[in-house]
Image 1 (cartoon, helix red, strand yellow):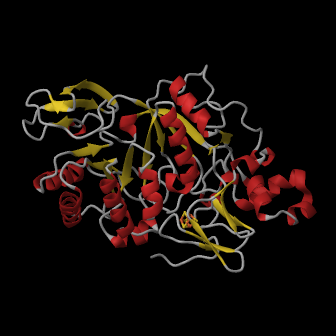
Image 2: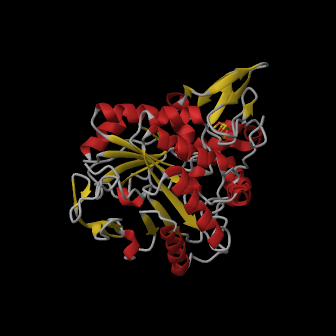
Image 3: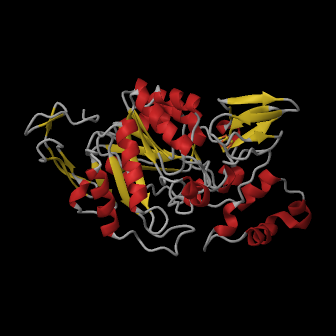
Length: 424
Ligand code: SF4
């Protein structure tokens, strides 16, 4: 278990930002045009964060990538986050305990933060108010796109489908290679949000012909209450739900999640506790347990392993991972070895050599896994799905494009071997 926390330990991420976002000091100077020195001195933490907030990459500009221009996703985002009424985003949290002296203990992820009144947990999106614990991000969407399901990636879930994909701010780990750090490593007040209640999300997914809502980009574990409500609204509207997560979650909330969603992709960051400690600020063991819980629940699961040069790319690690997957989860779970690109705090490392990814795949194939993919290398033959019995290509992919699906009722068209997945 991680060390228990009674205070928020995550540093505000403003100082890590590069241009054009100013440092905290610059923000206060700039904000001083309106605030004046006295007023600045009286800013409480929430006020400071609102003053310091910045527009999110896409959601608030109205230019939601991939969405038809005529279909604004969430109308009229506030002119500035400071103008937001955040009461609409706040709900009592699930999965926590009340402790003496108005403290609360969060039971959502293995970190088990112990929170004093008026403080937040490590993820920055859950707050103790008077001894009652709250989520601050219900219906508080910071980015939304319509993406190919292959981008998540899910390769055995409705190939060629588009997914209505959304995120709130926040994350319960701090991966040094995070690609979405500008929304995952911030607090809700630091990015502009749009109000998107679950029924609206389900309706927009339907309107845009998305058979799936995907909870992705940041970490759905920290906005679990919203995921559960969106998934329920989605089911009522005939829209499935798929979660893209690091899997750092306790068993009870995960079981609840499994009861509501149709697929969960786990980003397994490495097969070593050292990597989790040094690079992720998390733990491996609870993530492996989460994969087993998902399997027991019968929810469709795929595993992605981002191969980071020099940090998690050893043969022994690939072999240990493949053996664990085969013996504990079975050979049919898809395992994706994805290419790393220099990002966030690991810009000093090169992209993963393609030979390393091919070596990882060869090791996992030799261990007997049936569906081992290479990701983030568009055009590589290992993007496609092959029947493990006759070796014919049953889903032909190039990047996010599906060139052909050669399945009939979930079976290989050539030899009739069942290919596991959600195909219709
Ligand atoms: S979900 Fe957030 S508040 Fe809860 S234990 Fe994890 S990091 Fe702490």
